[in-house]
Amino acid sequence: MGARLLLVEDDLKLATLIAGYLAQHGFEVLQEARGDRALERFRRESPDLVVLDLMLPGLDGLAVCRELRRHNAAVPLLMLTARDALADQVLGLEAGADDYVLKPVEPLLLLARLRALLRRPVAAAAGAPAPLRVLGGALRLCAARREAELDGQALALSTQEFEMLWALGRRAGQVVSRDDLLQAVRGLDFDGLDRSVDLCISRLRRKLGDCARSPVRIKTVWGRGYLLLP
Image (cartoon, rainbow, N blue to C red; front, side):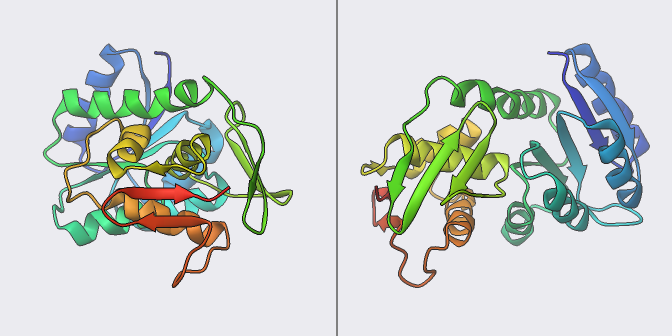
C-alpha cells in the first residue's frame, strides 16, 4: 500500500514483530518507544497513520493522542492496549483514537483494521452531497479534503468523526442505524455492546454546538439509530 506508519510502542520485541509483519504487507514503518518523543517524530515525519500504545514512558498514550489531535484531527490513529476494561477503551476513543486493538495483538486483525482506516478517504470520496442546511446553520462537507465547515467555520474532526458525519449527511433527514454507522467508520457489525458510535455522536454534537441535554441537530431515534436534521 506504500503507507507510512508511525508505531509508538515501548515493548521492543512486540514493536519489531509488528513492524516486520506490516513491512511484509507494504507499509513503511517508523518506530518510536517514548511518548514524549513520538510527538516530535510525528511532526517531522508526517505519517499517513499512527499506531499508539497506551502505556508509554515519557508521556502516556492518552496524552500523546490528545496532543496529536490538537495539531492534526484527520490522521487515522489506532490505539493498542493491554487493558480490556470498557472504561479504558472509552477513554481512548474520547481522547481521539479512531479504533483500538487489544493486546496480545493478532497481526491479521491489526492489518485489517489499518487497511480499513486507510480506505476511508477513498470510500467517502465516492460521492459528495450538496451543502446541507442544518438547524441553525449551514453545514458543508468536503470528502476530497476531509474538511467540514459550519457557517463558514472549520470543524476540527477526527477521521472517525468525519466519517460518521459524512454517513449522517449523505442520508440527512433519514434515520441511520448504529450498525450502518459502525460499518461506515470501522467496517464492523454493531454487537450491541460497542459504545464507539454513541461516543462519537456525543463528540459531534459538541462540535456542532448541539445542546447536550436536548439535541436538535443530531436526534436520537430510540431503538433505530440517529438522524441529522436538514
